[in-house]
Image 1 (spheres, rainbow over the protein chains, first blue to last red):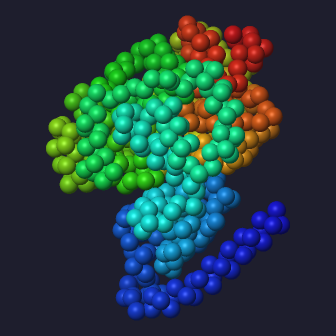
Image 2 (cartoon, each protein chain N blue to C red; image 1 turned 30 degrees about the vertical axis):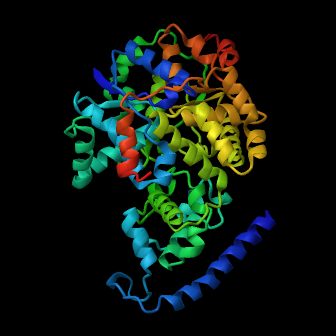
Image 3 (cartoon, rainbow over the protein chains, first blue to last red; image 1 turned 45 degrees about the vertical axis):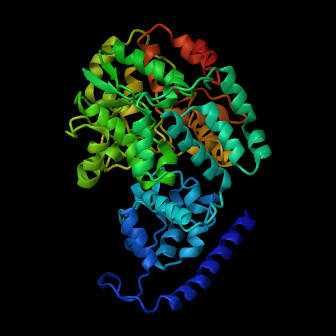
Length: 217
Length: 281
């Protein structure tokens, strides 16, 4: 407990330190009327435009952090993420584990007094991190998402058996994945819940078009 | 009552008993489900995690298929339901995208096929008095907690049929079945969902917190409306043997439908000893 508390403190201090750097870097940007006392970074504006969420409305009540089921496993907590976006801290956010550990449960967005939905913000940070070429810090999370979407592209529906095989191959730590999932895997096999043969969509061409033309995948 | 039906990928695999019991219960309650022709996976968490476009394009194709029939789409899985709602909203708000999808898939968006969750349909479209009249075997003595999980009633601006913090419809339905639902503080807390395979440590922590809380509240079981919640709670709890039901399974039991034993057999934690001890199975 104590260790965790002190590491949170360390992170907070870290954020503060980095903040002062960013302020210096972005001192020449324009000042919008809504937030006249602090400079607005292009990064924050981009996150706002792409997520459709007004990140500047956050006044740091931290309800999102308090209600977040996975905040304890994140490097920066949800309220910190919003503050760091406001301050234009692009690099630490695009390298952060927080967006990858967000499960999109919408608890934060439901409770936010300023009606900011953080789930689309977290998704936007993931897109921007991938576009900028940052390797996702949660390698297993990324590996599963990739395998999942590949499965849909291939069959139109998810086929657990091949999806899991691709996931295991893609992830860097095969041994620990097998160890932490083997009991569940065996149970599901015994209960005949993992199908051997895939179900295929007939108009698979349409699904591939969605991936190619719209998804750029 | 007629609905289009989107079963989702898990209805024949990891949540097969949810699929089977949903279909059986709907039939018994006079809800006709017409499966969408050639539906595809909604992309689930991975879709919106990696691609803004796939997040709505994949469920968008299912919403597109449903337009011709013009019936509301019954969706048992909360994740599929939430993704379909997001796609339907984009059809209404983003004209460029709608035109592109219409051209690509060859359909016309009419807005007549609303994505609806199965719990919403059973709890809101039916008169619960009619359901009560059909109950043949009241679930006397069963003390479950309702567990909505995260996205079934969220975000509220998309769902809007039950309270996002303190939903009540599942409790009412359980009372109609003759059970004695117990109140607790974790009804809308997340189970860790899609992190189950890639960060199982997180899911194990969250699941055990939930199961412990249900036990502390005096419940003998947890009732879910989600394939992901059910499988996480059923397979990731440690040191407990708390049965995790789908609400449709209990409804099937209360209506005395055939085949309930086959559903319960697919659970990792067999709920039949509990049901036998209450003389319900």
